Amino acid sequence: MTAPATVEIAPATTPLADETAVDSPANVVFFEAFGNGLLYSVNYERLVAPLHVGLRAGASYFSYRVARESASGNFTIASFPLVASYYVGRGHHRLELGLGGTILHVGVSRDSTGTSFAGAGTGLGVAVTAVVGYRYFPRARGITFGIGFTPLVRAEKGFLPWGGANVGYVF
Image (cartoon, rainbow, N blue to C red; front, side, top):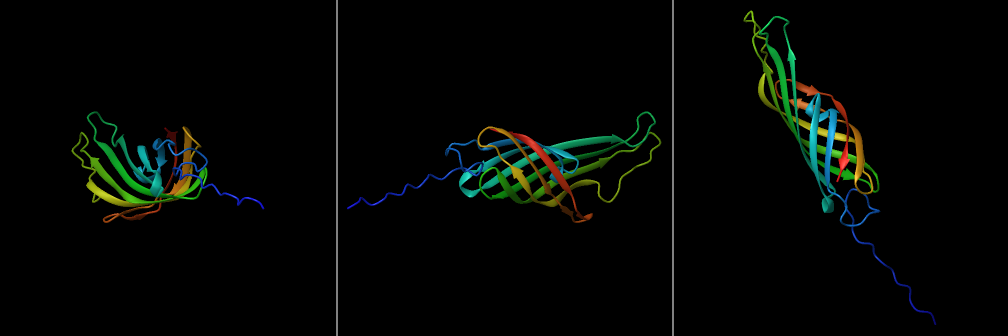
């Protein structure tokens, strides 16, 4: 008579890589070109392992001179994306589904002749944003990257179909 076979159950792992230990890294710092921050953003994301969720916050600032004369005005955009993402899949390659908001400040100033470049979209506002994309995570610490569709909706400006790409480091 033979002894019954035993079955071992593997412990749960983090959302980064199912092949690694339970204490896998859960912090990501990344640069995103275009995307939820409009032109670019620098972001920090905290991964919540049991839920397969990433919570991120980012920031960007852009300023452009709108006239050539001395003491000319500037067009500025500051953005602060706040996004919660759910990661679908196992291993290194994940589908990212996210929803959040981007706080925007669009500012303009007068040029030296007194001409103002202000429009209906200037000032402080919030755009609803989303992410549908691909994200690569390493087994442990290392380089991460992704690409995705990141539309923005702002009440006075409507729908902006947008996209972005990111690269960063998991630690």
